[in-house]
Length: 191
Image (cartoon, rainbow, N blue to C red; front, side, top):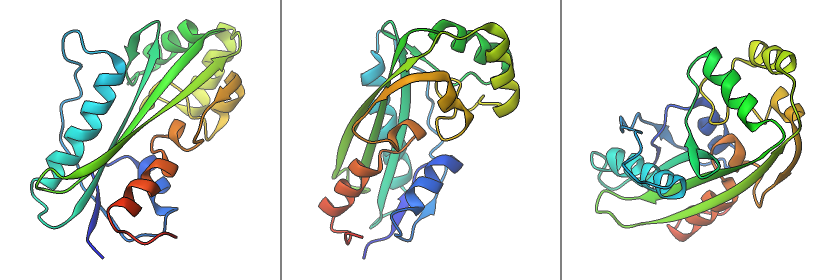
C-alpha cells in the first residue's frame, strides 16, 4: 500500500481521517489562503485543497497526499476563519436567521500531479440568535480557527435550525464519504 499523507495540521481533519483506519502522516502545506481577486468561494476552496495537496506531494515522491479546505459563503462572499473573538461575534451575528453554504473540497494527489478531487456542499440554516447567546457560545467554545465561527461537532449544533448535507463529516472539515471514494480510486483498501 502506498504511503498516505494529510496536508494539514488541523486536529479536526486528522481526527476525521483516523476514522478510515488507514495509516497516515500529517504535514504542514504552508499554502497562502488569501483569495485571488474575483475568485468565487467554490473556486477558492477547490484551489486551496489542490494547492495544499500539491505543496506536500512535491516533496513526497510515491505518496498520495490529501488536501482539504472549507469555505463558508454568505451572500456570495467567502467568510474566513475569524481568528479572534470580535470577528467570531460579527460572523455569527451576520449569519443569524440566515442560510450559509459551506463548500468543502478534498484533493488526493501524487507528486506527478495525478489524482482525484471532490466537492461537498452543506447548507446550514441558523436560527435567530441574540447577541448575548452568541457571546455565551463564543466564550464557551472559542471557535476562532473554524470557518463560520462554530464547531458543529460540539455546542455549535445548538445554533442551527437545520443542516442539509450529503456527508455530515464535511461540515467538520473533511468529507469522509468523498475521501473514502477517492482513496478507493487510488487503490487503497476499502474498510
